[in-house]
Image (cartoon, rainbow, N blue to C red):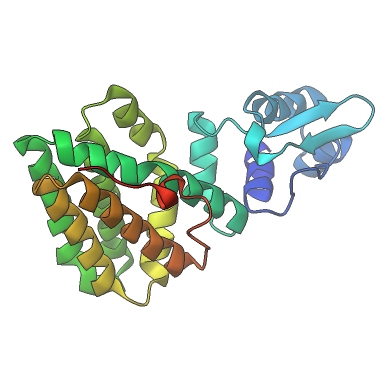
Length: 240
């Protein structure tokens, strides 16, 4: 039952402020007793997705209240949020605000081992670029794309960044897999990734920052999402 509600909420069928079906209606629909329904609702309450309002039922909370770092929430996001442009926009906003700084730091700190991981992921993307009509190869391409970005996070040698990329991997995968399907310029996207890799390898932090912005602007364009408004570094004067 919790999966049914999670799918309805994450896909946008129920928006923040909407009430989900009442306990008795859920009992009847899923042939469950009230204790089982309350247990499933508790999972959504504990992760900040809904709140129980005495005498009224359960209401979807604002996105800012969701515990998006909880493994259950990131899993639901990956499985069910593809139709929801608001959630896509929130994930992209995070990446726009953070990843250019991550790329800048990686350009300063990456070791030879880190560069090999980034290059291996890039080569995996390159090999599968023109075969994405095959669902299995398309998934492999997206897996390599996620690995590319995760390797850049790891190359910062900051434990928080590295762990955060691991926790958010499912939600990042959501955007990457969708943008790889929807993009009309796969070669240009690959070239933007190559330039980002080259700037990190060449220890050019400022250029890596801008290259990461360009990669994410391409993702935003493929998804039809406005990219610029939330970028923390849009007015930043970069120092050498």
